[in-house]
Every structure is written in C-alpha cells, then in structure tokens.
Amino acid sequence: MTYQLSTKKTINSLNDILSDQQNDTKMKKTININLGGYPFTIDDDAYEHLKEYLDALRQHFQTYESADEIISDIESGTAEILNTRLENRTIISRSDIQAAIARMGTPEDFGAETRFEEDMNYGKSNTSNNKYKTGKRLYINPEDKVIGGVCSGLTAYFGIADPVWLRIGFAILGFGSVGVFIPIYIILMIILPEPKTAAQKLEMRGEPIDVNSIARVVEEGIEGISNTITQITDEFTKKKK
Amino acid sequence: MNNDINKTLEKTKKQLRRGVLELCVLSIISEKAAYPSDIIVKLEEAKMIVVEGTLYPLLTRLKNDDLLAYNWQESNSGPPRKYYHLTEKGIDFLSQLKNAWDELLVGVSISTNHLKNPENDLSIIN
Image (cartoon, rainbow over all chains, first blue to last red):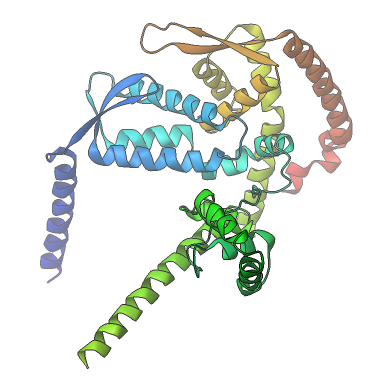
C-alpha cells in the first residue's frame, strides 16, 4: 500500500517535471522588440510579463517629475541586464524576465526605498499628498442627460446637488430670452468634450485621480452595464408576455 | 515578536542607507564620469543598494537639480549610454554634503560612544 502510494507520488512529480520541460520547450510564438535600443527576440509569454512590469512602473512613477526619462532609463537598464544574461542564446524566456525584474526591483521594492525620492519630487510639483489633484474640467455628462448632458456636466463642475435646477434655469432663460440661450446651449453641447476614460469622469466631478477612485468609476460603469442588461431582459420578458 | 523587531530593523537600516545614497552616488560620479551600470556595480560592492531601480529616479532628480549632467557615449556592445558627471554646482554640493556627513559621523560617535563601554554593551545583553 505504502509502496503504491509512493510510486504514485513519483509518477506525479515526474509528470510535473515533464510538464515543466514542456513549458520550456513547447512551440511558442516569439516577438521582436526594441527595448532601450537593444533588439530582442522574446517569447510571447515573456513579453506579456515584461509589459505588465513596465506598465506597473509607469503607474508607480507617473507622479514624478520627468517620469518618462526614469522609465526609459529603467528600460535601458533592463535591456542591459537581459543582454548580459542572454550570452549566446537568442531568445528571451519568461525566466530571463523574472531574473531581470528581481535585479531591477518592483514598485513594492521601491515603495520602501524610494519614498525619499517621492518626498523630494512631490515638493516640486506642489502636491501635498499621494493623490494628484486634477483641475476640474467641464465636460458634458452623457450618463445623465435630458438633451445633451450640458446641464448635468455644469452641475458636476460647480458641485450643485441636482441638475434639475440648472435645467429649469436654462429652460426659463431659453423661453424668456427668446432664443438667445438655445444657441448657447447648442454651442456648449458641441464644444464640451464627452468624458471617455475613468480619469476624465473623475475630472468632470473634480475628484482626485488615484487607483481607488478610478476603480470606483469602473465599478460604477460595470453596474451601469448590468443595469442595462437587466432592463433589456425585463423588456424582453414583458414583450414575450 | 522577534519577527516584528527584525522588520523594524530592516526598515531602519533601509532608511539609514537611503539617506546617504545620494552622497555615495555623487561621490562615485565625482571620481570619474560613470554610466548607471558602473554606479550600480560600485554601490553593490559597498552594499548600499538593494535593487537597481532605486538608482534611476535618484539620478534623474540630481540631474534636474543641476547637480549632475550627462553626455551620450557610444558603447561597443549596444546603444549609446548616458555618462553622468558632476556640474560646478554638483561639486560644491558634494563637498558641503561630505562636510555635513563628517559632522554627523562625529555626532553619532559621540552619542553612541558609551555603547562601546563593556558595562553598557548591548551585544552582551543580547
């Protein structure tokens, strides 16, 4: 019994080893990239890993002065590490990327080490905390509109509780001024941009842009979608009846 | 509990290192114009740096403060590299920073002098 068990285990671990080897040698797509001026041929999965890493760095350094320069320096540094690692091999694998990342460090590593840098950099850009405040910007608000979303956009900009007051105001002015305010509304509708990204939606409301607030907007978006889906299904079932 | 203390110790050590990293980087560059990998090798020898990524933001900031400047130089094995050197302002800054560090050394050794005294030696207590 024990013997059987142990052989089973051996077979399992053998399978593990085999599948590991297969992972290393099985046919993979490769991509040609230019990293920091070095040409590389890189496995598909290694490329994804590298891209995720560089995106995370970009996110981490985005509030820094000359963030682009820091990122491009890090890219050159990473390229150099990879180049020395490759020696006579021709293709970068995922494990090469992992080794390079271990040397270069992740944003978590920097979190402890570069806080000092952050403090120095924040002092310059006049922001007092980790959030970078956006100036409020005027957008039309397509999520809450009667005609063009101008009133609700203005409401978000000025921080008024309910767009209905502005709408009443515009309506009265529209009729009262005998047609002067109607073109104004139309012009606003044309020139004000629609917020496309989560960050722009936050700008519309004048909220600070950080990971949490963006996550919230995205969640709201998903809720909106699921609400629409429920509405559609409701209508659909009604029609059926 | 012991774990917590180790964590705190690591954090404090990092902070100590970080505070003087700038001095070390400037001083390495003052010896000879250097590109990031040179600097990293020296910092690693001195056990001053844990991950390379820490160096790049520092170099960029020192450059933005006009303490450093760089030239592009061709390399045999790849694309051109940024070689950093100290500016006039940087040389002045480094000598003042070095003075401040020396003062700090004296201050620290005065403050911690009694630890060398066998009766108060912490390593014996531990």
